[in-house]
Image: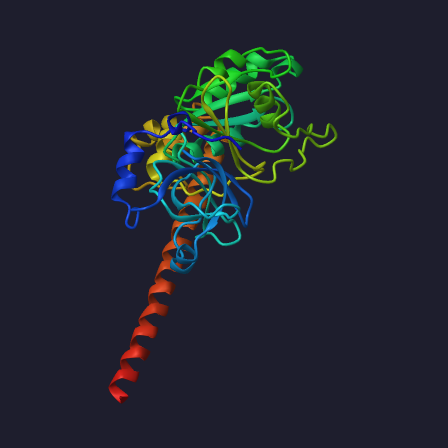
Length: 355
């Protein structure tokens, strides 16, 4: 591993410096960025070089946020031969969260501190407007700027047609049809990768994330696997999240293959993803119209008269319902935690009175 790294290449900026200065207990620590998350251990980039690291005992005891690739952290160097110890995670300016579909309130951070979120969708059986709408919604809630990258354009006879359909539903999101094999459209993808700029790349396994990374790195930096033709379901080939510094500048934040996103977005992100429905809904008779069966619902009228695609309406309603469930589940979990804490305080008070 090398020494004397320029953290500016890894995205270090005045904003990160200010966060570092305001972090409790930062004195005597080093600034570092998490490059890889191996589960029990991490690889971090610091001015001293790339280092193996673990979470400190104090950090484990406090139960704060667990570091993920892309995080800026404070760390302490270890004696020669030992692991550096991560002592805290700096506040994130963007992060992609995934709600556990089995436990609606639990949120898992998938990637952190990226400027752009590149959503990759393959133009084969992986392509679907519902999938695109869902991933754009998740991206808008992340804090990064979404970019929709439609891969394998060389294998699609109607690549431009599919790209236009995606643009119609992707709501002010850049849409790029490209092929890592033929090179078509890759210059537009590469234009996002600049010195100090981080691009997180998400999508189902097999859509071409690893192939794109290999092309940008100039060598086989990631293992690749093709989507199986019989069912178009990709094998899970990325076993950990990793942040790659590209030879020409910029950072590629690789993520595991994600087949489905549990949503954590809010009403604003839902409206900005479905701007057409929001505009139509402004004409509903009731301001709190749920667009299900209320009289004077402009949205239902638009569907009935063919002015609003029924597929898009159903996609919107499905995501709105899921977001309502996630919010309700989260509120219920918070209430249960407060109730549990209240009981513990009451029990402690009773013990004090008996003394």
